Length: 289
Image (spheres, rainbow, N blue to C red):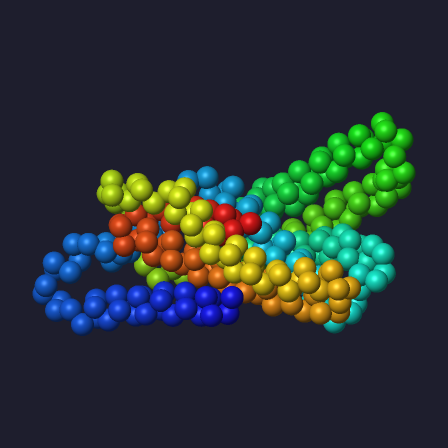
């Protein structure tokens, strides 16, 4: 996994360095160099994507889940959330999720500011409600089915009220707090100005669709599948003290490899003069899960 991640990073860096050197060494009077490549879309690369509010909510929720997972794995690796104690991991996840809402709010407001919007409260509300609402509805449907079967696994009403308090009383305010802090921060200075008239996108960029995103997601998935064999062996041999340390390393590798594949997808889009890279970069990362 480490070798594959390092090789991918080396390929991406060498390719970008070669392109930068080619543009830096060219003669300023020779404009043929600018007829193709990512230089042509410099004035459109930071243009607002379609359905950008949805993208903001998805990215902010992803950051919240990523921070939640990382903190949980670290606490489990150092022994604070031991699987020996029944329900410790689940309790840790439930308690850490609302606390990580501040990160989601911060990312929401920073992206809102990046896209030039003047208000952040609506998207902060959407971030605080979107993913937890889906999870809560699925949980309530499952709990209702268990209740109709008179199952002992039915969650009691007092626990449901407690979960609602964690969501609406702690998570939502922390999302708004993080959004307020992020929006009051320094403005994001873009390296290039956005052109008033969008550039026409060549038809040749149309083939970079679903198959490319699946291929980009297959690489991080393959990296973690190889490493998960060690984790499964630890479970079968009851060596839990080794499992969470390895899971933390696998998780870091997953994040790094996913980021590298997203960079590669964005680069392929830009060299084909297609500046619509926001959603493809998200799809390439999401397809790994």
